[in-house]
Length: 442
Image 1 (cartoon, rainbow, N blue to C red):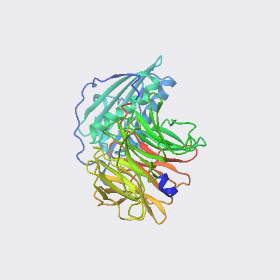
Image 2 (spheres, rainbow, N blue to C red):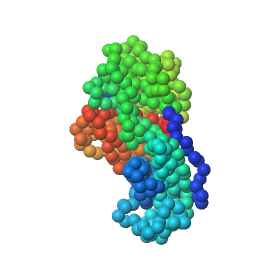
Image 3 (cartoon, helix red, strand yellow):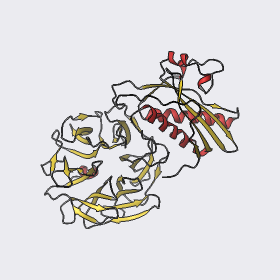
Image 4 (tube, rainbow, N blue to C red):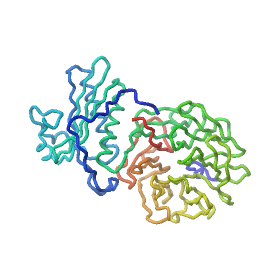
C-alpha cells in the first residue's frame, strides 16, 4: 500500500434555562426553500447591541461578548446575512420589546428579522433575555430568558442560536457538535477536539507517538482512533466520559475505523492473513464478520445513515476508487470513474451523496457524487491538497483539511463548496477532521 493511500485511509447545562416564552411570541413561517442552496438569498437579520441593566464594566463587557458570540454563531451556519451596524436606524427610546421598536426603520434597511438582548449580572449570577422579531409583521417570534453562571453565557447564546435556526430554517444547525482532528502541534500527532466553530480546542490523546483517524460513535459517547504507541498501528476505542477504553490489536495492521451510526459497532481494516480487508467489529473490538474478500486493498469504510450500506476505497480495479457495498447481500458497485486516485469517502447524513477526495493534476480536491455515481461536483480548486472531507450532522457543511497555506489546516465550507473558511489556528499541521453527531451540549 502506498504512503498516501494509508494516510487518507455531554455535558449537561450548568445553568437554569427558563423555557417560558416571553410575552407576545408567535410562531414564524419557515423559509420554504432549501436553505443550503448557495445561489439563493441568505436571511437578512439585524442584531442590536445588547443592553446591560447596569453601567458597571463587567456587565458591559459581558453584553459585548454575548453579542459577538451570537453574531459569530449565526455567521458560521451560513444561512444569515448579518446587516452592518452602520445601516441601523435606532430612534430615541427604542428598547428590547415589540412595543418599543420602530419596525419601519428596520424594514427600510432590508431586515427580515431583528434580535435584541438584555443582560443583568450581579454577584456572579447572569440573567440574559433574548428576543427574535419578524420585522415585516411587527411581532415577536421567540423570546427566552436564561439564568445561570457567567461562565455559561456561551451556552446560553448557543442555545438561542438553536432557537433562531430551528424557527427560521429547515435545518437543526450544528450547535452542540464538535470536530475532532489530528494535530502535530505537541510534537507528536495527537487527537484533538473543538466545538463546531473552532472554539476551545482540547487535546484528547497523549503519548501516542502517532494518533490518526478519529471517528465518533453514533451517539457521540465513544471515539475510535488509530495509535502507533506500541509500534504497529492499533485501534483504540475510548469512552469519552470515563476516559478509558479498549485496544484492538489483531495481527498485522488495524486502521481506518468507522462507526455504524445505528448500533454500537464499527468497521475497520485488518490484515489478519496479510491481505487488507474490512471487518465488522463490536464496540469492544471483537470481530463480527469479514465484510470484504478481494485480492486488492480495501480501506476507509464509511456507513450510510441507516447502516445498510458501506462506502470504502479499493484498488481492486487497478487504482484506488470508491465502492459501495450493500451489507445485507454483499453486492458491491463502483461509484467513481473520473480520475485515477479517489479516496476518503464520507456518506452524507441524508444518504444521497458521498464526499471524497480525488487527485487532479497531481493534487487532491474534494468532490461529492450521488451514490449511483452521477452528478459529480467538484467543491475545491486551490493550490495544495484538499482532503479528508467530513459532513456536519445536518448535512449543510463539510470540514476538510487543506495545504493551501502551506501547513495543513482545517477548513469548513458549505456542502456546495461555497464560503470556505479556516476553522481554527493552532501550531503545527491539522488534518483528518471528523464531525461529531449532536452531543446535546447546548
